Amino acid sequence: MKLSVKPITAVLLFALFCLQACSPKMSTTLTNTHYDKVKNNTSYAVLPYGSVTMPGEWIAGKYFQPAHQQWFRNKDSVAVSISFGTANKMEFYKEGLNGFAFAMAFYEWEAKYESEHLRQKIQIIEADSANNYVIAKVYSDSVTTIALYGGRECACKEGAFQHYTISSRKTGDAEQVKFLQDIYLKR
Image (cartoon, rainbow, N blue to C red; front, side):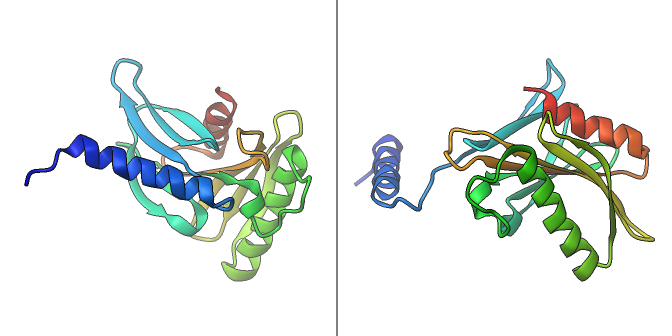
């Protein structure tokens, strides 16, 4: 007996819908990565939590599940990670914590972890309360990363976190900060 793919897909989608409808703690996300040759940009989305468009072609690499972190690399070996998720899943989250206060709490939580567990130094480069983000330099003798910690509203009631990092030996800190600002602020 040969089964058609379409009925199986429909049954699986219906089962997923039923599981989500019956479980208030479960949520459904849609994830997509797409390179547009005409516009020469790469889009990455984790709906309903957020999306980003990066200039140029970026190849998706490893995915680190605990941090919801998708890694990308371009032809110049620049490494970028993008994380989206629900704010209330963060260890430091307290009810009502959102926007810039969330971004600052996210930075402080990460700074404590980086310094205590990874022996990294971390310093704020920019804190933008109007756009709800903090950009920081995370570094040691051998590694430098620029990170953006953001708090955003989303279709989810708790709000969402957005965390971007960039690491490159070919571009300076100012260029990396501008890259993160541009992809965060572009909607």
